[in-house]
Length: 140
Image (cartoon, rainbow, N blue to C red):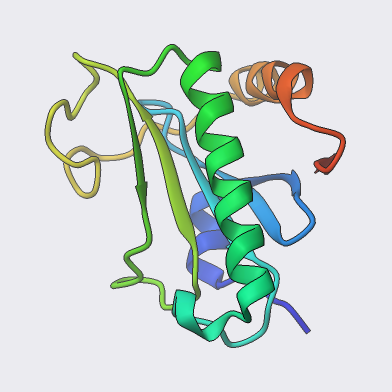
């Protein structure tokens, strides 16, 4: 049974699910920083997914990156799987803007996180409801 890594659970807000992946919002209002986690047990590397799931994850990632680039007027999209701190396979999709708190450096460990206020999370949900496909199911 799929279970979200406790660190991901404590650092993020769950937004909903694509057919394969759970969509999380990193609880740091300095950046539009999203994370996709394939709902598969004991997977820490991309190559551990079957070929169909690999293709699905890439489709979900590229769809999300395209939507976020337009929605948040990003100058650059950062997409990465690292897993040094959390071994559960997860894909970071971060909308970067020139002049954001860490620009042009990576966002990891650059500044202490600034938690979202509930109204900010609601506004992000509302924006995404306008642009995500029928394949995405929002959690409430």
